[in-house]
Amino acid sequence: MTFRIFVALAALDFSASSAWAAPDPVSAVDGFHQALVRNDAAAATSLLAADALIFEVGHVERSAHEYASGHLAGDAALAAKTSTRYIGRRCLISAEMALVATETLSTATGDGDVRIGTESMVLRWTGADWHIAHIHWSSRKLAAGKAAPASQNVPPRCPA
Image (cartoon, rainbow, N blue to C red; front, top):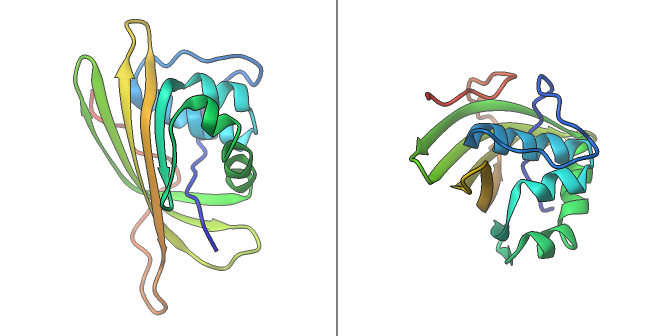
């Protein structure tokens, strides 16, 4: 079964009915995930660059429009029923580009499998806010008998 990794940041309150400007790369990443959990396709899509490139389990979507009309609905449905804890996050941020790399530990409701997820998002500064230009998601099942890595409820913030 294909398992997609998604995260929710309950502490953030994004408008469910409008596009949201991302003042920093981490806010864009967390806002995107929160929009998926809320099944807010407009907000999720607004955080993607028009030419966003999404890699997921060997598939490619080559634009925000292609993603919105393809996997977004399924990703949102899975995000809403997935419990996610964070293992770590690293960022590389420059004036115009950023990389936010996140590791997670997730379990979907009704699915006893614990998954280790990795996510890389490359973001581009538009002059006004940050947009996600590339996403790469992958995960693997936690091997039987293996201890889960230490995790936390809230995603770590990257240093400014």
